[in-house]
Length: 306
Ligand code: HSE
Image (cartoon, rainbow, N blue to C red):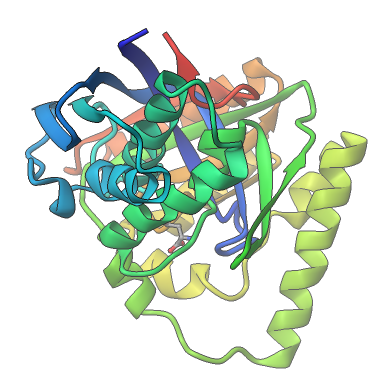
């Protein structure tokens, strides 16, 4: 096999309480990439459709993760990468991670899978770092492993796969403004009050428990972020109204997706998730801000060959 086409999914990082550690994988939105094995050595990006991104491998997220893996493995061939970008950069649903994960996943398949998912995450982290100026794997891990993941450590990379309750659905609204992850990170304080830290880690623990036991009530209560959301919500127009309306219309919980501006809600059942979508639409329809919404089941498979 010399060429492969893959689907690299969008993801929701943080999941409210789990800044930089929790994430889950979406189903209905993602990039496509085609990777070719070549006799000429090196990594080349030969096509980019959808958004205006750099072709030079060292400046492109997919290129940087591909180069990290290439240097580690030193294969006797090269790779050409085509990127069909569907996830808007700066949307908060793991656009850079989809690119970073896609190139290493595709190369690994073409090489006969010498690396496991943890090793792929390690190389993809280099690409993610180019985009956000920090290494965090909470979008990469769910893209590569699927479902819900907890990144216990990034050095060394240690990802824990969490179970997905079967009736869980996500609703997303993406206001069409761009928030750079690096800027949304620069807003955050360097230290955290102990009281807030206690609230946050109790929510992370109870969210993990809720996923293991399919306890939707505890899941909803755990979707609470007292550390990051208060700073970042100021960048997202009408965040509080969306959150209130979503919860009033039956969502289990609601929060900022990754570093925003997208907002996610989790619901029990598709019907509730669609009600929540309608409620989100109603709020933003009254504004001048263009937006789109979608409902997605949780993608337990993650990145895949098409
Ligand atoms: N955990 C990251 C953040 C995800 O919130 O900054 C965004 O890439």
